[in-house]
Length: 263
Image 1 (cartoon, rainbow, N blue to C red):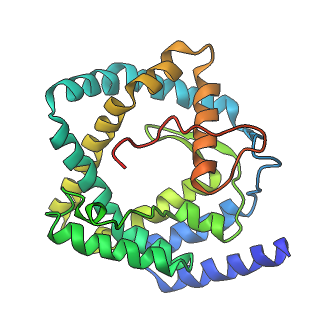
Image 2: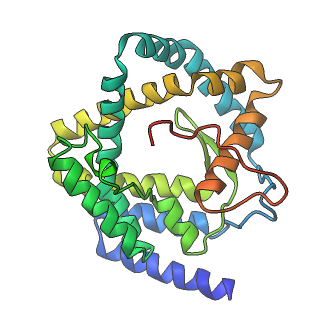
């Protein structure tokens, strides 16, 4: 059954690749090959890290980048930027992701979430002044996050190997393909002029610094206070991601160290 599902997935992705733009088609075609070796974890606690040597080198690079740039910048951000402004920037960053999330909701055949996120897009884009204010949540229309990595999970693609990406941090084989597809799948990537795209990238960079400021205690504990920061960050990422995908640890209660305090 799993082999049949995988074969159907390959056919589906290949057909999409032939009918979309050349960039997205190339990503999807490459993703089919990359994902063919992906497997689900043997258990929810298992860790598959065949590239640990390279991952650790990337981790040291990321840790050095955090120490030299992100940590000091987030400290200044937390002290200088008013909380209401930080919330607005975070809201706008999430608003930019909504069109892509609607598409992923549809690809997952989750029509209820697609309608919900479409409503959020309209309400926050108008009443919420381009998403700076989360007006939809105020009337009980809450976000239903979706990304292409999650879509692949719904389609039966396994998690694959753990990867640590430069700057972006923890990921998996499946999620790395998802990140690339999401970057091209969002309609805003196609319809917005270049100057608006640059603005969006700048907002997301500032939002990332804001996230670093909000989760400073947890991040500092993992990176600078643990005996093995790589192992700790890997464990935190995998637990958090599996929790997002609806998976549960079998023998222990789950605590998400990166829970968004603004939701």
